[in-house]
Length: 266
Image 1 (cartoon, rainbow, N blue to C red):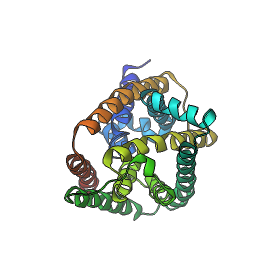
Image 2 (image 1 turned 30 degrees about the vertical axis):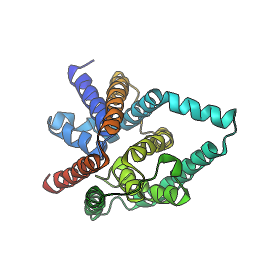
Image 3 (image 1 turned 90 degrees about the vertical axis):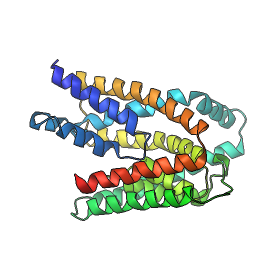
Image 4 (image 1 turned 180 degrees about the vertical axis):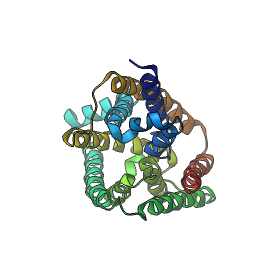
């Protein structure tokens, strides 16, 4: 194995493991980071077959970090037949189906030259929405148990935008949920739950379209994505528990606007 290949696999896995949980496009960061290493690394981008393994790694990290919550939900559905939990996952399913539908539509127009500007506009709008929410005082925020049908439709629509270059699925999902008056902690947890079926769908698509590469390097990227993703997800959840709503909203909005600035400049 070449050292350069191992290095690239580790870098891509680490970036995916960090930026998957932030309102910044990990796809964009990976490809721009790889481009910094020179022309010889250009065939190692996100779309050359590594995307499958990187998404798989972060999806597994969600299953591990949130295993207690997911196990409890499974018991409530399979044993207790809990209607609230069943309804919640029905809404997650609806959001996923809507995301895939609109994702296909946006994917078909993703070759248009104007599409990059659309990505910047979408993320800039989300950043602005979060800033406006961070300056509003005395709000009564909803919890994750208040997730409803309209929420799932809106989330499905905006998550479909994530196929546009530069658009972060986490960023648009959290932005819309917060605007729908879910607190930032519930919004982030929902974002994690929504990640699982979408990552599965993305993985299936990559397999069917022959966009997967099985090699030592891809396996290394998988483990790097999983390891870094698990650690960083755990840390982010702890941060969300400790800091107040307004500070988290402001920090999240600044990350989104920072990614927009990066796209405009570079």
